[in-house]
Picture (spheres, one colour):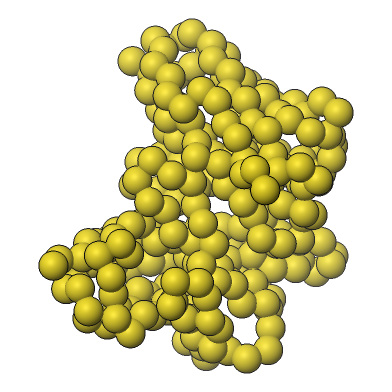
Length: 114
Length: 117
């Protein structure tokens, strides 16, 4: 079974530029999560999708971050414009369903904003 | 609000020695508790989880954890550590809200385990 795929693995941009991350969850997983992991901290949930609907985006900085999950499969997370404090690893995870079922994580995208 | 505290930022143990990583949580109802491991450059992998029932749970790679409601703790243990266990370990808490819907997972700040040969 293929795992959660993410791309790119690394990205370096200057502040005020825009960037997009892509995630392809495990086939058949209805729930998709985006987490932000700042160095030295645990992952923080940014947004949770159930199929193509948003379940929780309470911690997503909506003035600069956006995410979509068209057709309920893969997902894109965008930052525009980026700030220095957005430097982090962005993790995508998926699960069969919500409700604290086991989440499978991708390898993450390491973003550096200079 | 739910929260997780991992008081040890960094732990060093010798290969073959026993290991205990501490986790304390705060959650207003019955918690769901998890331990994840993260190797450098990798995503998180679930080691074990507790939902209900037996308070001693077994996980993968020889790890176990014990849920102690009175102490709000969910410590991770392994009787004999291998060099390949060197990684970052995260404790997380979730559960069901009063509405019956699931709350999001809240992670601790992690404990970095170093194993000396």
